Image (tube, rainbow, N blue to C red; front, side):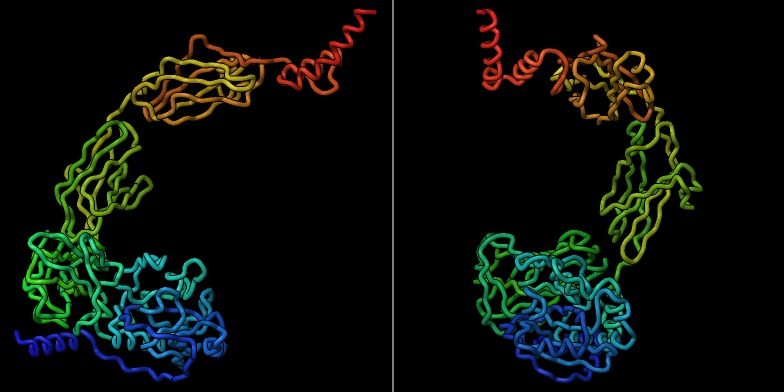
Length: 577
């Protein structure tokens, strides 16, 4: 197709997709606080709140001492919009996103719902729609945070909060701002779907997987400020990737943008990774550049599982990696109910569920209940787990000898459907109590601690270690005067009990349990004693000399010898007289 005809077709398609909104009335009121963007493409609009009045914000952002500015400030009632910095220049409002973004300050407070009146909101919607149309910014609100200059986590960006870029010290526009309404109202003004994604070679969704890719910024027809290129060869030694985050599953037209040239590869090997597999497309980058070139239409899941790669096994000289657009052609319908449902009881407390993949499903929900009525009516025994793109799940911690009804729902952003198996229920086996632990042993470690150990038996979910200062208290259990107990995990086979009484005898046992029951194991011998048992205090009874010497001996070392010397001298003088 001749290039002129292709451009006319593309322009016609763009006109059909997006209506040009009217430019709002804007008062030019320049601020000195700006610098150059350096040619960086605008792909982001950052929404702020002034945390003060409209007039105060305008005055402050025009003050050279402020060191801050924004492109636009919207008045509280929406009757005025002032532009302080030209779109082509870089305002100072969002740190490392300044070069790529336009900043809009809304008069009001992030923490006040009253900020978002039907005066200010329509004015904001009009302004954002006009800016998105003028600069080609995606009408999407990406989730998450762009947390550092080297890790800008958004893909293709769009409409973001100041708090998403500076979460460490900003919260605006706050929890009362309705992002869904912003996207809907802007799209209404544009008449264009909001699910398209563009990943440029400078966006977070672009990555160099291998090889050497240089940066160029001189070729006419480039997308944004620059592009990447790699030398070609007979084998793959360099590869790049564009990976979007798609807000909706469905069929997308995948389009590439590159600056054409006579030294470009005539067979640049692009590969599209989509829901049905992969598709290879060779592109002649010597022509049809400076516009979107369609690789084809392919099915994609919601999220970032689909992507495009370009390798350098081509000829004659270089391959160009610039931008890729994923344009929604038709959204996926609600995911159909999965088929091939199976369930297998692995043991008394675990059931493994399985099912076949469902078309365009972004995830699955497994529900179980102890009656059919509870399953369908959200009764008290119903439990649910939401899963990603998997087709098997093992449910643990179930009750032995219990019948469970179950079903699986496939879903995507458009909705989903349940599938109920035949038969609809499955019973866990009764199970049996665990084997008793063996090789019980206890060793006094000090006056106040004992080390207990044992070898776990089979089918154990955990242990209780019990001690008491009499066999009667041990057998009586909870409530007995000297009875103590501690619960331990199934992986535990020893325990150091501290804080015990010196010189005391302790009787003990280990109780192994699982959901089917439990069993006690008693050691042989049945008791163990801590060391020590003597006691004294300062000013205690008996001979002061003997007490002091005993304390020093207990402490040991040189201080004990020095304390004992006067006592020995007095005894020697007594014997000599």
